[in-house]
Image (cartoon, rainbow, N blue to C red):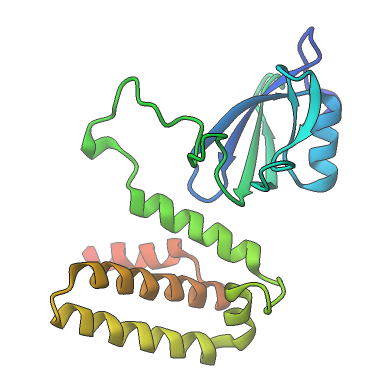
Length: 208
């Protein structure tokens, strides 16, 4: 659907659901006019219309918590949008990751999206966003610039540290080192253009 196909309301606005491109989490529900959508497309940064301030604004212009827009989808009627973003900081003015953090009806434990799954998806998006960044300013970019040798060395170090933490029965260190190991493994997968879907398919094959 083109920009011309969108249906703005009588007030010139269209609702926008802002979603984390990595985890799929809903971050914010806001509104945009045509100019805001045009600026979002042109700059790949979230632009919206503030109904309370009656002005166009760019997410993060004051807080620094910007959002890189990787895709925009319209619904079937063209009267609502989804911005899929890679956030650089919390979406909510309260400092929460999402504006939707006060449960009215909590989902049963077994039916919630796992924090681990969401975190991994978010890390994948961040790693991809850092590809090509300045290695002097981004640790991920520095790892990727060093290729398999640099990343592999870190994986070896983190694996050893995880084993030591486990032998010492230090729970917090186990969690910390396991996170480090998984993070560097994700960077290696990105370096080799291997997706987690491929790894998941291998798990499924082994389970059969």
